[in-house]
Image 1 (cartoon, rainbow, N blue to C red):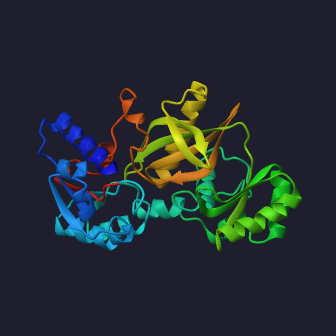
Image 2 (image 1 turned 30 degrees about the horizontal axis):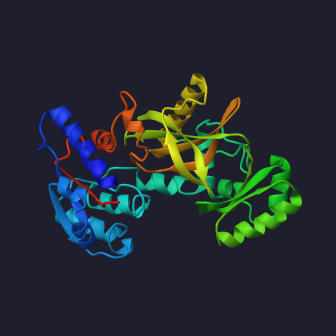
Image 3 (image 1 turned 45 degrees about the horizontal axis):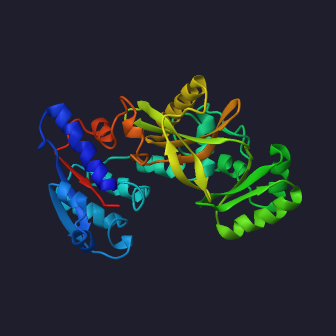
Length: 342
């Protein structure tokens, strides 16, 4: 689905802009299984290159293979889709080494926001309203995304004793989170110090070695997201928001766009905050919690350029992904390689 949407989006942009279908030459990677399944993205592409099947470690998540294929077909750019290698900073770094554009965030941006604690610190440094947590008030020097070790250490809870001190400042109820957790793992809600002691040990066991922090629990909140696109010159735009509150087991089920649950002024502040952050870390998806009379950022900044929400493209005047990324990164793309099919 990802590659199909990518190809259609790029084709539409090329036709509307140049009134021609041959401006772009699209090359896809495909496994034998994809060929046997008669995958639509293969039919839509101008060319495909067969790669090994099996686990995605052999194909769509294999950074070395993607770079090798891109060099083989002399691609000017690679669109990674989502999942697989799309959030692996090694991919944009390896492509940049060979002078191939990556249609997505830079490796530095991925490194910066891949850690929830660093993401919160970056947000605070951009004057974004962050929900109270163990690193409240800490900022990083302006002009970069690197988080100094002393600042990172001050926001991280290494022992149960440090967690108890921080919890007393943040206040109950609160969430214990593993910075490297996700998908419901490495997260516990606690209401008392006794629950904190149990939950802290459980989080440590679920995500071994991950830094841990605590964050004030936000109740009766809505999960809102903003898609932002930024170029290499520090310019950024917001491409509307969406409501992703319908979830099951910490996983989104339904995404609605545009946002209707928050007042218009709060929606505008949501987008302004996302743009300020995008100017520092690049393109991605910024997640917010909307409370009755406030707007707080949660530590989730996903450095991916996608068209995951099927409703977003239907909003009037909404730019199409990933064509918009192509416009910002390369004025004209003679050859683009969507890396995978899923």
